[in-house]
Image 1 (cartoon, rainbow, N blue to C red):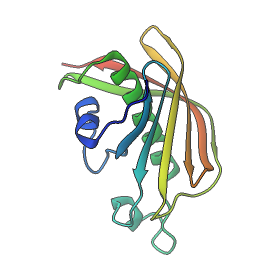
Image 2 (cartoon, rainbow, N blue to C red; image 1 turned 45 degrees about the vertical axis):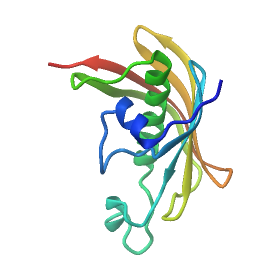
Image 3 (cartoon, one colour; image 1 turned 60 degrees about the vertical axis):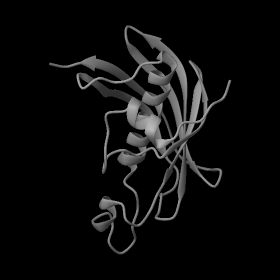
Image 4 (cartoon, rainbow, N blue to C red; image 1 turned 120 degrees about the vertical axis):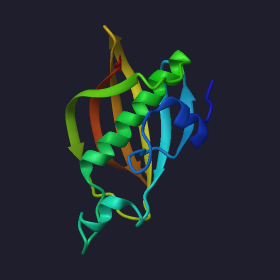
Length: 149
């Protein structure tokens, strides 16, 4: 079954808020398998003022963060859980990151994550970001959920 998620559902699943929430909408979701989301990249993003003023480019680490948030959405929605104030999602690892092309204002970033495995509370995902069907970043990321306080 494939479902979508609007921003309200995303906010109930992720602790991130402006300016660090980097997922605008979920386009496709298959529990325990995969997710496809989008981030509309606008010139109003706070990082563009300094990266780089003469040729604005979305920092690659923020593209990876958007992918990690997408992967976290896949995990939480698959579990059917909403976050409490004591829940924190940690980005615990990355392997094989490859940056293929820059992301610029006006791009619509398509974020895809697929569960590779889950062991001892750590999820490993294969992730990919693309713009207009062209790969931007590919990597494997690991995330975990921890209770604080």
